[in-house]
Image (cartoon, rainbow, N blue to C red; front, side, top):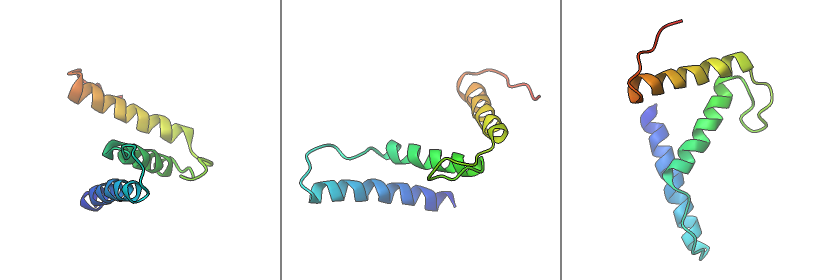
Length: 86
């Protein structure tokens, strides 16, 4: 599954660059990280039960738990802090 997601991100990045070049645009195409951020947002909305297009219908409790989990990952792996289970 993750291989498919990474391939889709690579393809979106390549396609955007190709389309911008074909249109004669001189601006830099969106970076790979842009597409990762968009995918992250849409997946977060889906995970929380919201419509990824309208943002409507999400569950704030689930959203808070997902955000808390992300914070614990950051603290444990990147800030070197021990994470205490609640």
